[in-house]
Image (cartoon, one colour):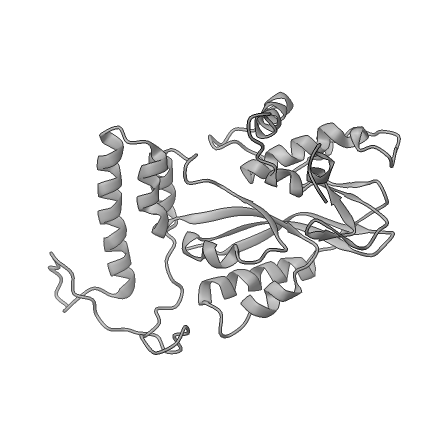
Length: 289
């Protein structure tokens, strides 16, 4: 079971001193709802609807999401003491009286995978089949913010659920040990952009078009939460731009990936959920401040 965090982009606005950080985090899907309560974050996560069933099963078997603390039942939201009681289940034929907690979790995983494979073989879409597998999945999330203090205070705390506490602790470790890149007014924070993707332009603070292509590539990659596609391939710039066009289609806009790329501005106030930075999303026509 993996809980981890790594820095994707880390920028400091030279004019107002406000830091903007993007991380890629991995954690059990069963704490997603808790993570999503933090509204100062811009985030995009790998979708259960997009990943082929067998690939999802392979990922689960290689690295199964499970509790890191097997808490004993007690009143309230926290489980202080761990429980070591054996768990009796159908078909148990071991020499002992029952399964350990981890063995029982793996028993549930095996049975769930068997049912999911039967649905898959019968021709049901992955957006249905993968829902069965979610308790055992990890999430990969791209998260960007200027404000982290409240999250760390609430989640890296003894009263938090152990898995989200560990996630917050890992995020805080990489955040506090990272050295942000100094950016100036008009410069862009561009997650998932490689050096070869950046083109030098003369700066025009009245317009973002001098970095428009790079910002759109960055947004497309944030939508995937990776440099790579779901199939594990490195996309071409043309493929990134086509994804951006699909996200921004006239029929319906999926604008959240455009919240991660952001331009340094003088004003230290809030624009959307960031202070001192203007998201690519705020340059989209009809997008309100």
